[in-house]
Image (cartoon, rainbow, N blue to C red; front, side):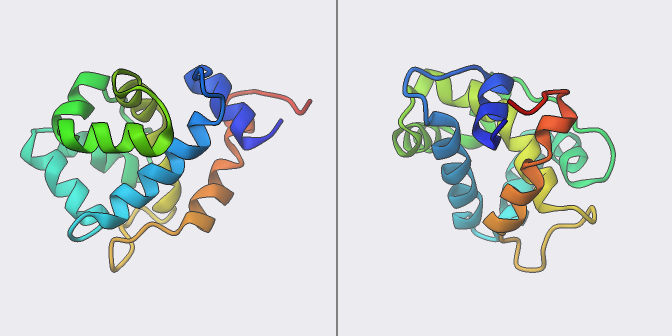
Length: 142
């Protein structure tokens, strides 16, 4: 089973089919474009009272979930609309999908429990680590 199949089964199929791959790419680009990269995103979570949630994604422990509306509050409507356009999904779908994907993306980008020095997420590292999601979610190979 491919990474996209695994993510598709994890977050549900979007009508556009390739939405998960595009959303992961958009999420990586979004995090890296923040002032300070992941550090900037962490600061946004802290400002909204959700620092413990994002910290759980960075640490080596279990990832805390985030509700779609809480994620929308952290990101803001403009960012949600932009991410939806880049991913090819509807704005009302993007935070639901992203609330399932972003914890795994941040976790995969911080395998040692620390934010990279420049706060930039490495797409190769993230996608390589996400390849293990099939084992994590008990999906076999097709």
